[in-house]
Amino acid sequence: MSATPEACRATVDAYIAAYKANDKDALLALYSDDCVWIDPVGTPAHHGRDGVAKFWDDARAMADRIELVPRDVHVCGNEAAAEIEIRVTMGGAAMAFNAVDVFEFDDDARIKSGKAFWDMSTARPL
Image 1 (cartoon, rainbow, N blue to C red):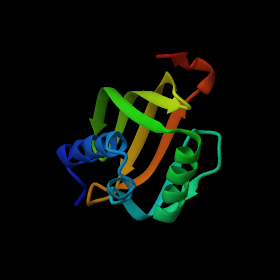
Image 2: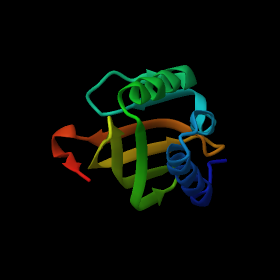
Image 3: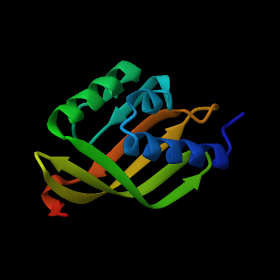
């Protein structure tokens, strides 16, 4: 049985909360074992929780803080698209840019695959 839209929405909410809390373990728990994550689209895919963990670590090596601010979340069946503002702090300077994260969920509402669409050239100071 497919995950309910409510369960998928709860996973997106938990994904955003994990970023806000800077909680890598909470984030990784949201992914299926065999997930595929592409962030941003056009870069190599991250495979499995280990791949997502490496992506998290690499991003944190560049930024002091990363926060996702949801603007709107659209859930249809076992997929969702989240319009978000990404706020990044690096070396005391803060910037923001817009993104759309697209998720596909497994039957347990864990992230099976996802893509993040964003362009750093649109970043603006905060």
